[in-house]
Structures are given as C-alpha cells and as structure tokens.
Image 1 (tube, each protein chain N blue to C red):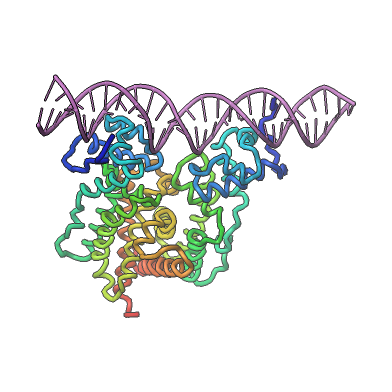
Image 2 (cartoon, rainbow over the protein chains, first blue to last red):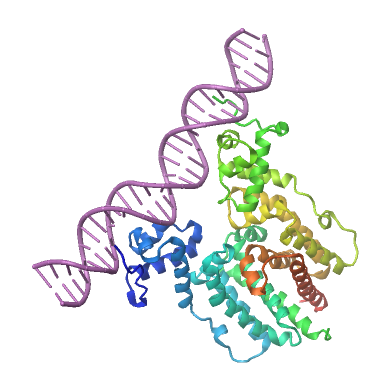
Length: 215
Length: 215
DNA sequence: GCATGATCTAAACACTCGTTTCAAACATGC
DNA sequence: GCATGTTTGAAACGAGTGTTTAGATCATGC
C-alpha cells in the first residue's frame, strides 16, 4: 500500500529520473502516441508498473517528462544574447541557429520533443510553449526589430512566425518537401541550401520593408 | 469462397463506394492512425468485414480512398489558369486561394486529407504528392516566375515552398500558433490577417528580388 | 531483530485494434 | 426451382495497448 504516491524529490536519481529521460527521448523519436509504456520502461530498465507507481498514468508521465526536458534545454548562444553587431548578420545568425536546431540531426532530442508537441495538443503543450517556444520567438523578434522600427508587436510576431514556419515545414512535412525537392534526406548540403534560401528570402523582405515609407 | 477479390467496377455505387467516401472523410478528420475501421464502417453503414472483403486491408483502403478523393478534387480557379493580369495581383490571388484552401474551415475535407498525408509517410503519400500537391506547386511557381525571371527552377521551387510553408504552419502547428497569436481559433478575421501578412511579406521579398542586379 | 513503509517484479486485467471465420442472404443464369 | 457465385452479418480471434494486482524485496528507524 502506498501512502505517498510520488516521492517528487528531484534528487531521486533512481527509477523516476530514468523514466523521465527515457520518456522524453522516446516521445521525441516516435511521438506520444507511438511511444509505448513498455518501450519507455524497457529503455529505462524499469518495470511497466513503474509508470503508474511514480506518475499515475502515461499522460502524467508525458507532462513531467516535457517539463523535465525543458528544465535542461541548453540555451542557444544567439538566444542568450549576442553582441550588438550588424542587424543583418544578427538575423542571419538567428535563422541559421534556428535551422540547425530544427533541421539538424545531431541528436537534438529536446527540439524534436518540442516539435512533436506542436501537432498534438495535450497537457504538455502549455509547458512547451511557455518554456521553450515563447522565449525563442521573443528573441527572434528582437533580431527582427531593427528592420521594422515602426511596426507594432503584432506585425513582428507574424513576421517571426513566417520565419519559423519556413524551417518547421521541412520537419513536419518532410516526406512531401523531400519529394518536391527531389531529395532523399536532409543532409548537411540540403540544410545549408535551405538556410541560404530562407535567409535570402527573409532578409530581402525585411530590408524592403525598412526602405518603404511610413504607412 | 471469393474468386474475384474486388469487383473494381466504378459504377458499383454500393458498399464499396460508400466505404471510400467514409474512409476519406474520416481520415481527413482524425488522421489515418485514429480513423478506426469500425468508425469508417459505421459511417458507411457497412460491416467491419467489408473492408477486408472489398479492399484487403485498412492500408489498401486508405490508398484507394486517397485516390478516390484526388479524382474528385475540385480544381481551384487560380489553378486552372487565370487571365494574364498584373503579376502582383496574380500572386496575391494565388496566395489567397491557397490560404482559403488550407486554413478555411468550409468543409474542404479533400485539403485536410492532403495535409494529413503530409506528416505520416505511407503508401498513399505518393498519390497525394503526384496528383494534388505537385500541380499546385507548379501553378504557384508560374505565379512567382514574373518576379524571378533569371532564377533557376530550384530557386523558384524553394520560393514556392517558402510561401506554402507560411500557410501550412498554421494548420500543422495550429495549437502553438494560436497561443503565440493570443487567439482561440482560426476565424475569418484571423485568416484574413494571416493572408494579408503573408502576401505583404512575400511580395516585398519578390519585388526586391526583381529589382536586384543580376547575380 | 524486526516492524514499517517504500519500491520493484511478474502476471494478469480490461480494452481496442485490424482481421478472420462461417453461415446466412442475395443475385443471376439456366 | 435450383445451383452458383457474390455480398453481407454477427461473432470471434490474436495482437497490442495502458493499467492494476498481489506478493517479493529493499531501506530505514527503533
């Protein structure tokens, strides 16, 4: 009989922590739906009953795993605060860093987990938006701001979404995008090509906006 | 004992056709994974065994349903060939029509089915890309062409993807995008706002590209 | 030592899924 | 009418899912 359901002490470092890591990585790889409790537990070296015991249910485990993943998400260098150089170089660096995080396949499972949560709305989505997406969008808006000095916050946000969407598309619609481009996978060469295009396409629009007369 | 597995005659108009329609609409609403055989059959007023009998398996039913949906996909007016007016108006109309198809909620289940297939690569994806996506991307490239007279096919394709991605994002990442915009649903007002922004963002970039000196 | 509570294990449970079975109903040609 | 082949119906099958159970094991305080 269990009186205190979860110990909830962070310095557990035992089965509970292993389950969080296994769940976060498995969900990042396969999605919440296809990540089975049995696979997560096998990965964590735990019994299937451990999920119920430590977290109550698979849904609760996901929320905790996403929270755990957010807490140890490494801050991107462009995001913590790059030195104030040329605005164009600054925007280029921001887009490139975003693209590497989203399209790069260097086992950035935190980013993959973030992208997984975007499609399927559930309890973990709020955590992802608040702790991972919102800050990065805000930082991207700062990189945009010099080009749109007279624009309101709404326009800056829509512009940030336009930039992010061009990169996210190649993740969420990868099979279609690859066929449209006649490619087989997102190798370094293709990612570089996409980044170069998005930078060109975006910077042209923003520079033109800066040169336009006030509305 | 069945000697001829499926009748395959189009003028059946019986259980087989009802299953195709029910499968296409259910998959468009819930996705292939969440669209159960039992729900499809209940919607078609058929027995669960009818899927195995008429199509062999759920996967085969999906391929046939997607093919069936493509065959009766209504051609968008901008796509069949608009009169050669101002290139800017032409591009605006193309983006607006695309956005209405992707974001509009006027029971365009064919478009939803198309978007569903983009995420989960399966046997039906090839049909969707070949019969629905490729022609529309090609038409969009034609609307782009006047702005990029010196660009190669690759650049035009990447630009078309940039445009489509800005709209598709609001579908595949709707929960996140709505939170970022502080909205609750994609009503007509929000869709109009997004379309206006994408048109402005895109046209600025393309116009600037046309004014640049040859590379 | 030992009682107590927390944690783990193997097994089962209840449920849903796609698919199959087999007989009944139906249509069709003679 | 009747034989033949096609289509449908209710029920079950087997595999998979998340969850629960009951007992074993471990850790800890007295």
